[in-house]
Amino acid sequence: MGRVIVDMSPSVDGFIAGSGVSPAAPFGDAGHRLHRWLGLEGITPAPADLSAAQGMFATAGAVVIGRRMFDVGIDRWGEGGAFGLPTFVVTHRGGEPLVRGRTTFRFVTAGARRALEDARGAAGDRDIVVAGGADIARQLMAFGLVDELRLHVVPVLLGHGTALFDAGSRAELEPLWVEASPNATHVTYRVLLP
Amino acid sequence: MGRVIVDMSPSVDGFIAGSGVSPAAPFGDAGHRLHRWLGLEGITPAPADLSAAQGMFATAGAVVIGRRMFDVGIDRWGEGGAFGLPTFVVTHRGGEPLVRGRTTFRFVTAGARRALEDARGAAGDRDIVVAGGADIARQLMAFGLVDELRLHVVPVLLGHGTALFDAGSRAELEPLWVEASPNATHVTYRVLLP
Image (cartoon, rainbow over all chains, first blue to last red; front, side, top):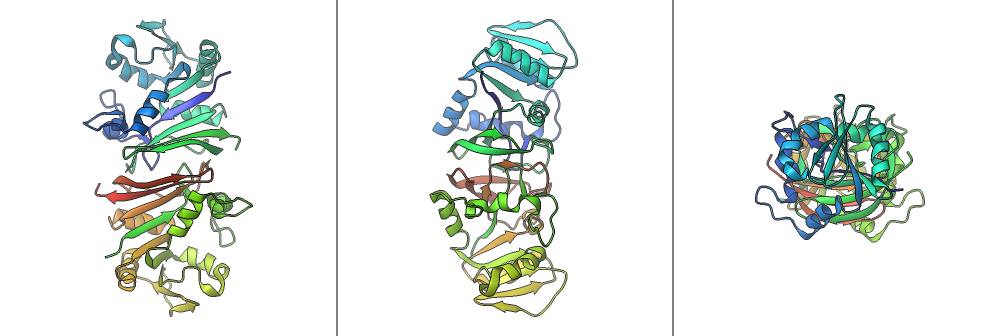
């Protein structure tokens, strides 16, 4: 059975989005800052960044995302649909599956846990990557359903925004991999029982 | 002029103490967990941990701490007084300087900023280490008076406790040094203007 991996880019103070989140600005006033390690805004990714980026979906068999991420992303991702993998969208609004290139989006109205179960069915022995948003990650952490955290810690203190963790995110962690660049410190943790 | 360095051991979710902080349990229910990378509880520090521990006060000419840390520490630190450096205690209660071995504690009632100025006078060209608590660090961050953050990020999610950063801690950071062990990820950041 594959692992459940939360993959996110938080600030040093733990926010995965800034203030003023809206469909036009999905990461609020901090979107570019938190993701430029991927090569935005003229930043040249370092070898550690490229390695982290290439590793994101390399072992994945399915993806779980939240509705906001879907709404914001679907037009930007274009005909390929971004992930090239079965993708399960946690949402209050159902709907028929949407096919974009190699990506099929399925809408799950029974919560994050159910979306994960559906993703497991699609992923087989491969991993499931939870790519956003923070609320989905927090719910799955609270259920004890996350096996690994892949954090790309961005060297900025935002002061406010959407927190990746909350009081339900209690766990002992085991560092599996650390690699740093000037753009981000990439740390993978195994999640152990609290 | 020396640098002002905040040196702390936060959890991955940014807490430098757990719940239930008291004089008997200065770091609440998380004290040992956050500091065992220094060699507590049968943990053997790795080379990266030893290097980080030895570096803490290696360049320091003075130390700034809060009153709680003083109250809790003064009996535990013994005759040497812990730091072996001029130490300035931010407090509402004044008092005569206290000498313990090579450490002289001075009590500053005019706030964290003033304690830093006094520490600068004592440190000369050497660095000033702000060793705790979080409230002192946050105040100095908000004033833009911190040059470096040395974070020993401990692989645990506490869920609650005393946060190292708050809304006033906004800054762009530049990673200067990263070294990881199974016990902690040691990251030094230069603090740039927000």
